[in-house]
Amino acid sequence: NGAELYIKNKKGQAPLDLCPDPNLCNALVKCHKDKSCSQILTPSSSPRPTEQEALEDCIVCSDMKRDTLFGPCGHIATCSLCSPRVKKCLMCKEPVLTRTKVEECVVCSDKKASVLFKPCGHMCACDGCAALMKKCVQCRAQIDKVVPFAVCCGGSAVVVEETEAKKKTVNVRAPLSKSDISLNISKFPTDKNENSPSASLLAALPGHVMNNGVRDSNVNDFQKLQQQLQDIKEQTMCPVCLDRLKNMIFLCGHGTCQMCGDRMSECPICRKSVEKRILLY
Image (cartoon, rainbow, N blue to C red; front, top):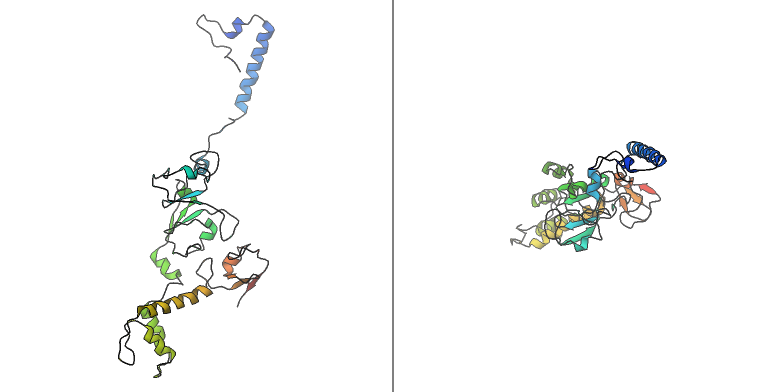
């Protein structure tokens, strides 16, 4: 450390000119050369952080990683320790109503949750498991858009949107319409007995004329029938992807489809370790 050896002052004197000891002058020149060589060979001790590291660091303290999701805007700007002090989102200036810490993926439990589901606003799955899902595993809402973690932090990435055509092809659990139920019921054999299953189902439909000539307008019965059909589908569908039928059972008694079950080390329902997988045929 110290002054540059060859810079002159107003009188035209360099530091070496002011040193009376020639041995000390030689030692200073030697140390100056060694220091110059070491600075050229060794890189800077504090390199500039990359763009990815800057997006991951907390905006407030810059010491910890961002791990708190603000609602309803869906941005991630601070760590869990700094988030209680933030009243407005530091990225969009919207009021912060909810603060949710981003935990591990609820499906595989191996990676941290890294995608935000829209419109429900939940971040509960990693990017690998989210690719299998059409509905949010936390609230069962339809997923219209998948926003990566980098976009929530203010970066740039590809945002996946579900098209309407894709929803129609993969939405196995969509409730049946009145016309669909009428077509399905018409396949049953007709019976003049009012206690027959087909007669009771037809009587439950709103606006249908029963045998006594009275028009039934009870909408609640139709909704109950629709809910029963929905419950039957929920019992047979995979609870993870909500698209494929259950065909794999764990020793704990819970089950998933084979594609989701092969990726899991813990049961998504009870969190018990998966020791054996049993396929159903």
